Amino acid sequence: MYVFSISTVLLAPKCLTMQCTACTVVPQYKAVFEKEHRNNWYSVKAYFIAQTIADIPFQIVLPLIYGTIVYGMTGLRSGAEHVAQFLFICVLQTLVGQSLGECWSLLTVLLLLLLDSMTALLL
Image (cartoon, rainbow, N blue to C red; front, side):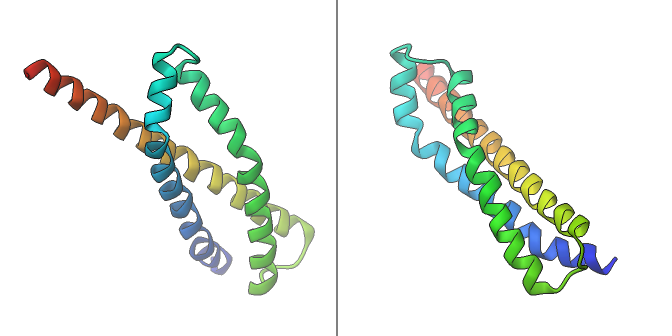
């Protein structure tokens, strides 16, 4: 029980950080994405698949570095199996946080596009 509470305290802010990062990055690229999508350069699906694939190396390497440092500093259980489990959870939590952030930001962008089209219809 003690290990899980320490892991929760160490990993929860990391997931929230990844969500907030994704929520702020997607709206920044909205104008560029809209222009390129209207020119039929690529589809929405292709854009998000490419964005996800481009982010994967960072989402794997950075949590491994973070987890290695934190695991050594906190003095959790020793053993390769325990370290591997902790690092695996770090990577999974980062991937989930990034995915949730991208979903929320995509929903926000779609909502804004919907509102823009509704106001254009009303005017």
